[in-house]
Image: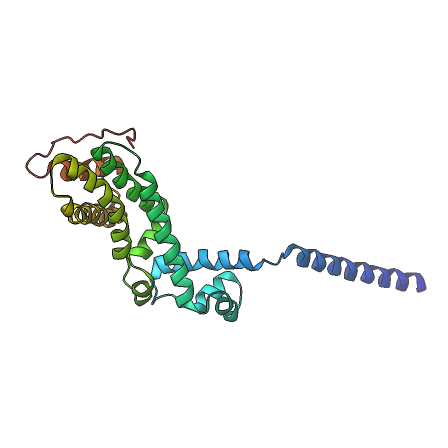
Length: 232
């Protein structure tokens, strides 16, 4: 009987040891995030929620829950929902502006129009959540930057190019800002429409935008073509 009792105790010890070992393994798998990693995680979660529900429809509680942290962690990194939203908006504005201005490399004005149209449509396609956030109206967006101000920034880049072209053609270069706003605004609003319909294909949308901008209604091509190297 003594032997049996000893075997029973030994088995219990082994079981407890195994459970303790398993618990330790599980704890070992939980790697704590650095402050930078946690900040990026919160930004990614916030970006997704803001795109889906807007600023008003998103709560700090939900952001914290999806990140697996407490609300104070969100406040510690961003001071609240407004701070998180402002950083998300600023990042998306910079990304879009960089994509558009970086794409304007051609020498021919018509190809420059193509490049600008493609850059915006590329952004919408690759960063759909970001674009949804930018085109939403919100009190926070108005204080930290808005889609309208972003379009104005992009138009400023185009304005310089148009000014040179106007001067070369004998037009009044002072009108370049007006035309720059009109062109960029046309592409941006079309992009908002294309955001949901996604038809026709991106290249076809770009071709039709440039067709209208380049020829005007009177000289529209029935089957517009792209002259640049991008065909899709």
